[in-house]
Length: 357
Image 1 (tube, helix red, strand yellow):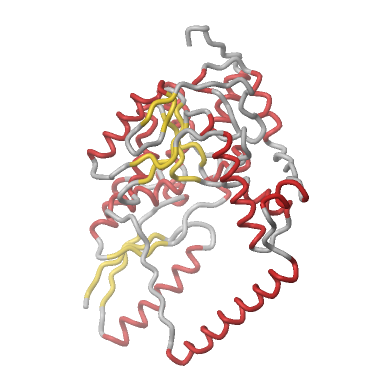
Image 2 (cartoon, helix red, strand yellow):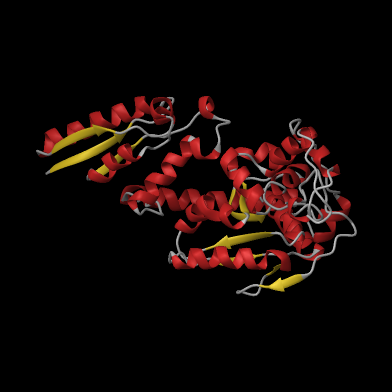
């Protein structure tokens, strides 16, 4: 067997791992009579340093021309803070899109000799958990969670102090900032309209949302809005359920609240209560890649990148998109910033809006 392998060495410590992987491949080739030809391809931080692009077309072409790609992990502290299009991770997204990949297959094999041990370990873990659950009452009732063990307010990261001040800005409706430091106004009201699938959104974003969904559908991505506007009661229920889930795993009340709020916002601090945010799933994983690259054209932004959690207060959510208007969406996309950073910059620049906005 003779094969061509494109080698992406990766960043930081990855080249050391890839080097040893090639040694293994060479031993396999020697033992079984194979021939492997290696072609270096730059991606991620290495490509940024060389070409100013996380995956130039000529490097992608090397990968597409090969029989397979040996990929080292990309990214690192050196390249943090770059605009969205220049981040090392963008190279990985382009590679996957170029190769038509949207899922990872990770085969696992249990050796017959170990099967009994695996089953025994699983039973032991289940027994220990059952005993601890009874001993420490890890499953509190709804009333215990919310009353006897009151919710602990988690102090925001220091970097969010400046962000919180942006809530005082007289921004247009589509730039309203709602997060854990900026709750929804008590008198907030919204006129809703139903979208395909039964969810509802602010009627003012219906047209651009449908345009975006239609464009994604034209790419055979099967987009569907799985969550839109949420009432206070709905958000409370999701919030309580998430805390209870972590309590059942053995976390303290304070720990459970802190973990839960990375995934489900405290009632009154969720963008879903604005009616301007939607969670979108699709028939294939490529829907998320497409949305990240194209949503700004329709006035939406990828709201919660994983690398902005310290600023947004929310863990990475590839499905969550927020309407901010086409102009703001394009600027946020091109600058690689989150809404909090964008509004802070506008505040520093003294930007103001007419009442007609």
